[in-house]
Image (cartoon, rainbow, N blue to C red; front, side, top):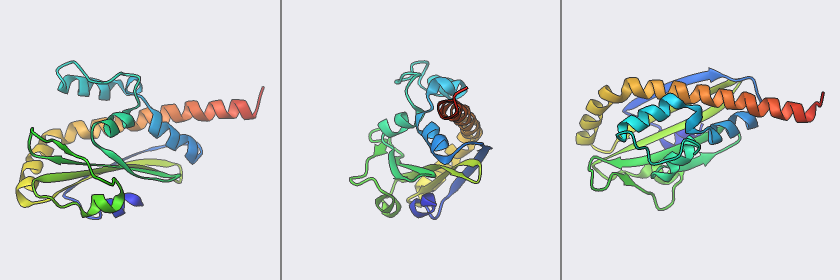
Length: 185
């Protein structure tokens, strides 16, 4: 699992899953293309946090929004997508971009005052999982993030469930379309 390579240790972690009866290609394609419109609770929470004015279209893929806001796809295989981002505890420079966004540079980043956030979608044996891991680069950041985690943890779990269910619905759509093309009535 590439998430283990990117963040072998963590301060906080959260895991969720749904069952999907489809080929890996359909599941992973759905994970990459599911839109905010397909996850309305997630979209609503983000809209609420941005005072009712989200800066993206409801038809934009959720994953693209993360990548467009400073996160990077660190690894992509036929059964896993790993995304990572680094944030400072400062409003002046909230997200740090890596010069070469890959698993190795993400893992070795250690500038004080930051948290590294990694998450994945992985499909194996009919189960789509997502895991989020967060590690702070110093003690002060770890304390600050621990307080923040207490506040966001319930919403974070809800978001993951909504996102996974939207992916499963889109997977069913992709899979049924491919079956229709392969087996005309």
